[in-house]
Structures are given as C-alpha cells and as structure tokens.
Image (cartoon, rainbow, N blue to C red; front, side):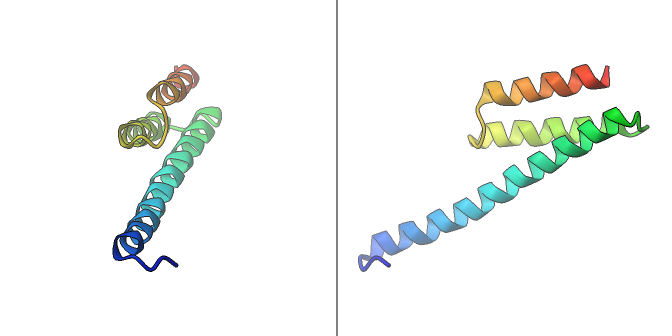
Length: 83
C-alpha cells in the first residue's frame, strides 16, 4: 500500500474504475450471448435483444473498453445472424 496521499487516491480510483469497467464489459458480453442465442432459436424478441446488445457495444466502445472497430464487427455479425 502506498504511503503518499496522491498514490493512495490513485489506487482507490483505479480500483473503482476497474470495477465499473468490468461490470460494463460483463453486461456487454451477456447481452451479446443472449442475442446470439435468441437468433439461433428464432425467438420473437431476437431483434429487441440485438438492439440492446448493439447499445451495450456502443457504450463500451464509447468508454474505450473495446475498440470502435471491434464493436462494429460484433454489431455486423449480429445483424447478419438476425437478417
């Protein structure tokens, strides 16, 4: 544990941000898996699940958790499966 006040604050804030980023990334992955499962099973609400997955991907890309091109690639593949 650091002794300097600013270093203590950096450790604390980095842990908080890490927890928040992990939660957003986990929610994104879950949304993608649900959307893919719905498209495979031809569910009625597949388009809604894909829309939420796209929203999660855009939010993660906006926060810099994943690269913009990676988000676009995921979105494109999801759209191909739905259509």
